[in-house]
Length: 151
DNA sequence: GCCAACGTTGGC
DNA sequence: GCCAACGTTGGC
Image 1 (tube, rainbow, N blue to C red):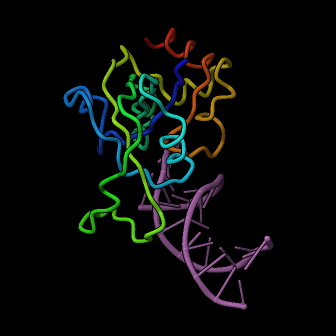
Image 2 (image 1 turned 30 degrees about the vertical axis):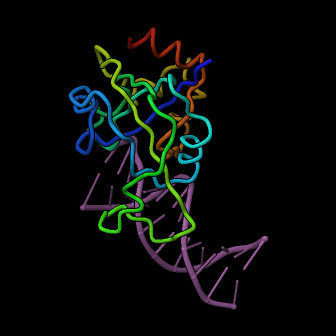
């Protein structure tokens, strides 16, 4: 049984198009404990992630594609590299990364505006007020609906 | 670029 | 362990 997730990225930093070019990328730089714990404890190979573009123009902000989890978690090298801007200075705190692999880019974007208005999605973590979590679980019901809507 | 929401830090 | 201060996220 796979789990579905939603992962956020700012498109000017790393977009679905770049993931399509790269094929597989290391999802590093997560510096939030709850998101870290999902990667470390729950995300498994074969899980599927809705790829979300955040912090963009309203018409570009939303779910744009699908990726697969293709590794278990491993230490995030950007946290232990002292020359990295994302270096972790507290020795007792460890961060992890996972590999994700491009699956598809949806024919159209499911904008945040649209998702917020959709009664099928009213309990999604994403559309709840103040949700800043960069890795979110998505229920099977919401995932099936989103795939029928966008995929 | 603004700023509300909210996670984290650290003094007490 | 409380909570004010601070830093970051991300929609707008």
